[in-house]
Image (cartoon, rainbow, N blue to C red):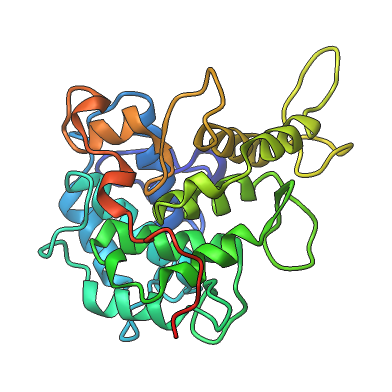
Length: 288
């Protein structure tokens, strides 16, 4: 912790805070570790016991996690908690991680709606982002195979493609869902159902045509931003676009960076997501 923006220079021993809001945050912890792995760091300098204790302290009785003590709580932060533990503990959430996997798994499964998608919590509207974070959390905790009738979720994801992907029914296509929905299909072992040519065409139509800089916007004919550029490229990687590094969707980082979290010398030494998490049997029929 410690931020020059808030006037507190980073110190490994802890710097006095210049703001009551300058504290640890679960989402920022996830992104910091993801960046370190992407840059080639082995995380050996991270104070792992304290980070894991921080994560464990944020889980509530329902199994969900808050962003920080007393902060907002929903599926996003449950995923961040699972991802942080996985990155620090060899690529998966072990039983001794400090996370109550049973409670967390129950929270995720109870958040699936009648339509097969997942909301940010039980009883909430299904959404592409919460569907991904719920599925990825289950995959990291090793409980994805406990998802009942996975074809319901596969169908919900497939129905979100209208060229590019929409985050909810009757909404516009948005490049960031190239990853949120594309990653969900990959986690379920149903990536072959993605219409790759249509997705690629939509993402490329959102490129910003400028003589000095580019980037990818959320919609065609709008200005680009880093978030949508990043997730569009992630979605294109999952769709097999040439020239992009393969992605590990469970952690939202490249397979090469994920290999570092697992202690592998090369990404090829690690099993692929599809080999470990396939739960869909190839049918979209509802049982009975």
